[in-house]
Length: 208
Image (tube, rainbow, N blue to C red; front, top):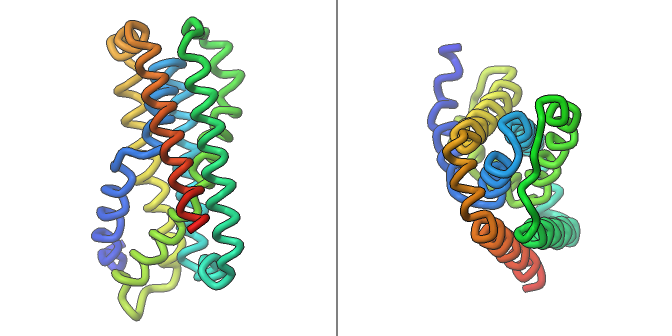
């Protein structure tokens, strides 16, 4: 693997980007505190797989389609922003509802749907693909070993899933959940409000 040493700076930069608070972080944190560790890790896995998809697209240059066909990119941004606004409304709406009580059996049964939830959320922002493409173009050397797109994409998956899994584990502790229960309305409305802002900004930028 020494021949792929040039990937470390790229993965470090993208990991720092994943650690920047945004819709993905908010949703993993919200799920970890309001549901369970298994739920939150399933969301984190979905986030990682979404990043993997975008990394593969960027690695093989297919992301060029989004830049060449501007209407397609704008459509994705509008749909992605609308999706975040819907999530914001749903989170805000549950602020007055009692926290769900989960059991191991219930958690395991619905883990797959939470994975899809995380995957969909990650894929709703095509800007991620463009960020990956820009970083790859700027930092990848001219001559790379065969298999670089696959190794790079796997690294992106591991870094994204690893970060969000850490968030899920830390915020799903009993102490974190007890704090959440004490300030449930404030957490839900803050998370919902921020998600709504992210969504509206995506729609507004597409309309400009």
